Amino acid sequence: MENNLNDIFKLEMSPKLKEDLRAAATWGRIIAIMGLCSAALSLIVSITRGAVLSALIVAAISVFIYLYLFKFGNEAKKALDTNDQQLLNEGLLSLRTYFKILGVIMIIVIIICVLAIVFAMVGAMIKF
Image (cartoon, rainbow, N blue to C red; front, side):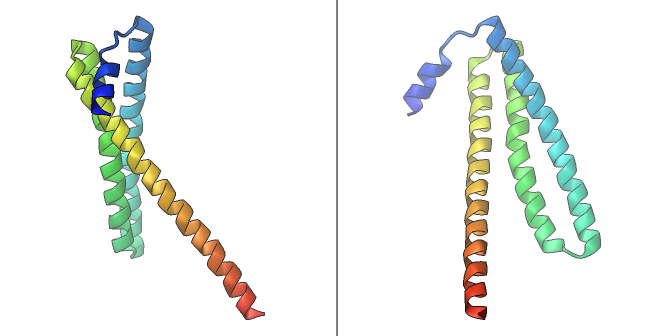
């Protein structure tokens, strides 16, 4: 798998691809900064309402996720500015990690929702 990744990254980039990648890096940085600010505000609001533990957990996960997206944006932009292939590879691997983490979180959320529906149905059946 790693060998295939190295082969893919040896492709030359057209000016259009560089422009699109630069735009993706810029948007990645913007979304990461907004996400980090949102996590901080959410943490402050949750602490004032007394939900400290859950707020800390959610904020920590959010910061962890958005740092990967921010790393992608920074490394991709630097790589395009300096034509550094290794830096571009690292940036794209950060983006890959970002999406893997989001995928795992989405699977966990779906499982929790399905379990909640099953328990609600069982609870409704037992009540009658």
